[in-house]
Image 1 (spheres, rainbow, N blue to C red):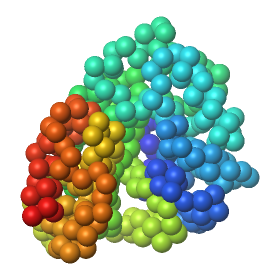
Image 2: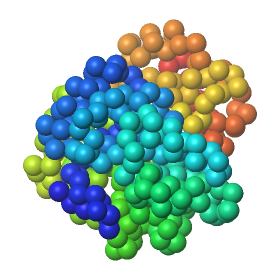
Image 3: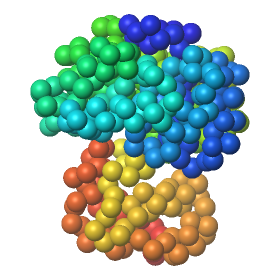
Length: 332
């Protein structure tokens, strides 16, 4: 167990990401939370935007709330909106306090405004004084935002994507660690682009300045596999070779399936196109992926290069170029 930054939250270095809860039932959620408790995983991260995730987790934690630290987050930027979201989270999670409430996915152009009198940070400070939340954090897909947050020192924790192929936050994380700001790693498996969860988590947690990784888990098996990584965090030479192979294979053009690019005006299912291209290219499942692509309604070939998706992508991917590559591979 370690402390999450300078907070009093003493947690296991593998936490629980609540996104996958959306695709399972309340009964399955209960089983997953049971397994978390059994394995000592006590940090749960969810969000207002994850549909039923807060509610299912809240139902599952009845009678054992004190065994877990709960983190959630909101996309609200104004004062009244954040106040409302905090109350909804408290109700959904069936608790009278939340350990960590985070401003979610803050872009650099809106960073300065969140501290204004009529904006969200004021609502978080008030909730903190009232005992409704204990700590305040920030999440982002923008390294500039995270660097600014570290510099300002107004947040107890930061949350940012970090994995084998996305390590641009390395220096920022080191600075945050020195300042006692808790470091939470989202997308440890690069949004599903990495197959080897054990290696992916080991890579992250081999770095002592990172506090916790929060892979999404929707089964007992996944919980067991992920917590087992903590038994051996040392990277072998074979591990390091695999890491370099993964980086060479994926490069800088892979989709994390965050879906911020959607909806496409022409109905192109951008993440699904990239997923099928990945199966075709990286998994060598050529016939299988072509069959599924042929039945896909929102094919890459519908793209008219309007560029709207690229303005919304938090990873600044060359989506238009990547969609053309999908056409070349799967429509030949």
